[in-house]
Length: 260
Image 1: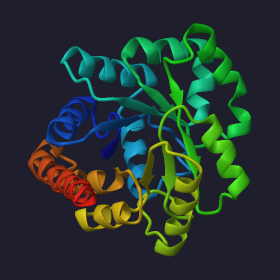
Image 2: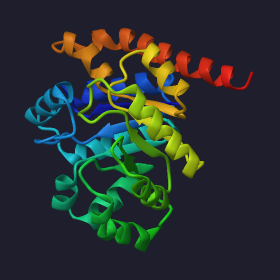
Image 3: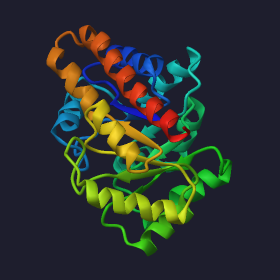
Image 4: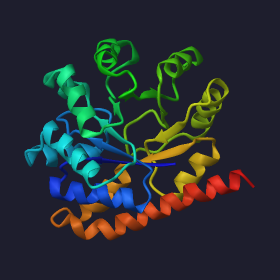
């Protein structure tokens, strides 16, 4: 399973629309689309710069919803998860945010700075309309205790986002700690476990799947490609398409090997 991430509006919404379509047509099974934020503390330099460019260009959360809606109107059926830090959600108002997300065709929410203990109000808002309409993705880290992992699993209604390293997006991880985390999670649940942070190549993806993950999440590596042609980012789309196809090929080969 291949999940890809982009921050919408970097460097403009027209390119983001084309990038999203390229990712989905090149092999991405699930798409994460992020709302640019002024202080993306969980993100590395690549995505921090992406957020700054998007915000400087005037991108708003409403524009992000519109971008997702256009993807649905063009017939894309893959799950689309909306990534946002909590401040934009709170500022917009929980009721309005949830309503807009559902109407745009969002499958679930990924909120990096909202702890499990702080999700009650948002969960209530979602449940009042349709509890199955939006999932809140839960994060597991290499520092999560066994009891904490049980709480995360119990709260999860979709896949579990496994953070492969004690750092930010784009960093490199510790294989031993990740293996230990994946083994623990697999012993506790049969829910899908997708690993993100620090995956830069098909080789990385194969290794993550070999360790036991059900899928990989790739974002910074994509932004790293188009930032080299940031004045005319459309020129990077063929290279990005090839990159996604190679990642997808890596995940498919692993799946086939697993069933030999």
